[in-house]
Image 1: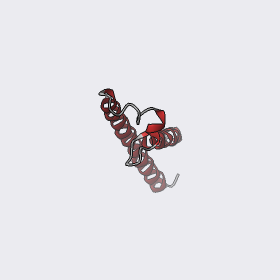
Image 2 (image 1 turned 180 degrees about the vertical axis):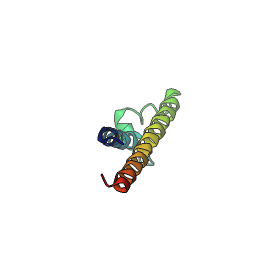
Image 3 (image 1 turned 90 degrees about the vertical axis):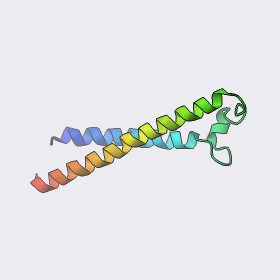
Length: 86
């Protein structure tokens, strides 16, 4: 496989890693988390907050799947490159 494939996966991995950290920090934990800093704790009694939490969960899972696919893709690329001896 060409080298640009690995560079693309590395860039995508860095971006998704950063996004994953931000999305996880935005989740509400037992203590409120960082999501309460942005108004999540104040509007928790409103009906819209559950929709926002569901969307945050969906985005986190989607970014996590892309992150995992990048890890697997880089592993397969490395295995093929080491196997060919290039």
